[in-house]
Amino acid sequence: MERVSAERPPRTRRPRGAAESLATIVLGFESIIAFLAGLVIYGLKALPAGIEPWWGVVAGAVLAVLMIATTRVVRYPWGIAIGWVLQAVVALGAFLVPALALVALIFGGMYGYATIKGAALDRRNARLAADPPPEH
Image 1 (tube, rainbow, N blue to C red):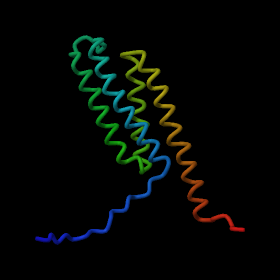
Image 2 (image 1 turned 135 degrees about the horizontal axis):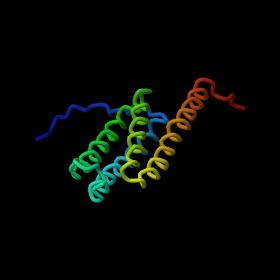
Image 3 (image 1 turned 90 degrees about the horizontal axis):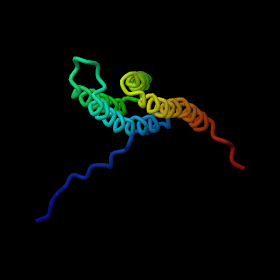
Image 4 (image 1 turned 90 degrees about the vertical axis):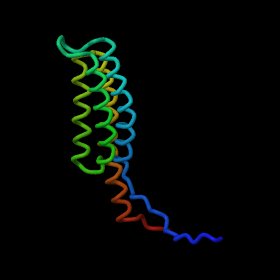
């Protein structure tokens, strides 16, 4: 028997700018580090007295999930802002484990570069697309 399949046209992907692509990559990798930081906080029992150490794992997991969720909305200006808030949360983790200051510096710098330089590249590409150079 022959199968009759309704042929669907191939789905076209939404064009993504450089800022969105780069910010997504940084947040995706940083989510792994955020989860591992939660494990470090748990292992070092770095939370203040009265707070169970396993809350470190929960905090790291929640932060990692928030970073992954943010990768879906970095196309919007408010999504970029959420990414900056998450960078600040990682930096605040340095009060518990000072080594997280280095993580915040590295990933905050990469996120800053991704969003600022990526936006500049997007503006340049839009300008070139609107006014293509003359052909000889």
